[in-house]
Length: 469
Image 1 (cartoon, one colour):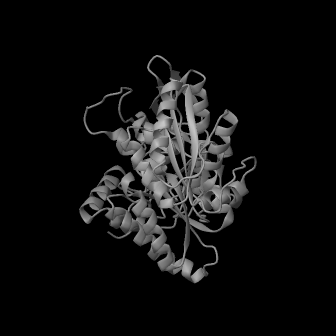
Image 2 (cartoon, one colour; image 1 turned 30 degrees about the horizontal axis):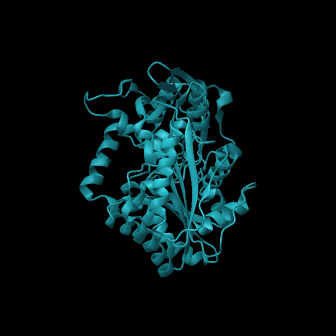
Image 3 (cartoon, helix red, strand yellow; image 1 turned 120 degrees about the vertical axis):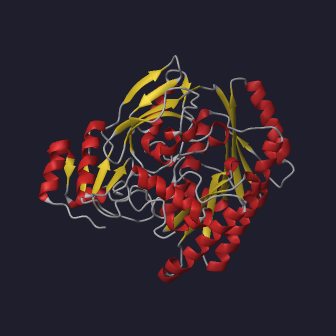
């Protein structure tokens, strides 16, 4: 399904976007041909930078006319290859749709365009005493539109939920060029099928998001953050569900294996943590609220749970500087792993009580197929990021043995009543494993939805659904 760009089509696209926003040079196309998924690069034939929904609508009309693949491209921070132009065609960057339209302080809502960087949005509402809690590790560079397309989570999802829990309404350009709003700006909506939630997490395969209405919360004024060293990784995982069973809902509960912290400390500056050689893992635990005395009581209750396990001295972050340093370390783990070795990152999620079994299984499977892994993630959600590192593996084993191991990891995950991805999406790299999580009937339903929205299969083709059911 490779696409050949003709001068006739190029002229039509320039008339829509304006010549300064149409790019066919190799450097630009290669730059927009990758995200953060391994070392993949699939350059589009042409990169377009439309200014608004109307221009995107006209582009989609042209795409359907000539059967041109169109791939929506946001901040290019994705980890599943959702923004890769695997069939060339049009790479449609949303980067010019980068305005916060309105912060509604009366109704605690924000209306934004998709290319606003997530942290900029968070900071803007924070100035109004409001809080948008979804904070993926790439929040300093990812677009809010990409967060919606992937149903992003992040560290604070354990208490506050993921992107889908905050999206009220979306303006979307459909594959045929029609522009619709999917819902209403209300907290409750039981009116017909939920098109809004269908779009959330659809990875740019059903429509292109051009405006987003999000729910906000009042901000909390205080938090307590602690870093807990464990002598056994599995005990760190066991402690997670016990904290919840004790009646505490942390605002964040993060798991990091020893290698994850060691590599990250070497990768970033100004984080100095002494770790005994016997320590295997850490939990980073945060509680937040508006009453410090209650937070300290919760911290004490957490300590009572942790004392059942083999732990070392707990580090309580006393200052904002210390807290920021610990969060900087946690958010940099992925980049640190990437800087050490070629790697593949899996984004498994299981019910949190099953986390110790998943971690043990990952290590057993790694030994079977000869690869090492560095694991970390949002333990409070049961969301384990498994970084399979190439290290000293031969190219042949990397290509043949690792996929077998990944398949077994996914089979184990599903057997534990989990699924393939908690927040990174399926995209290009995981689609052939979808049959592990879904049977033929379920996959046919998904394929039918795609066919209904996009009969010509022009919008982000080759993503999510396996080539063969």
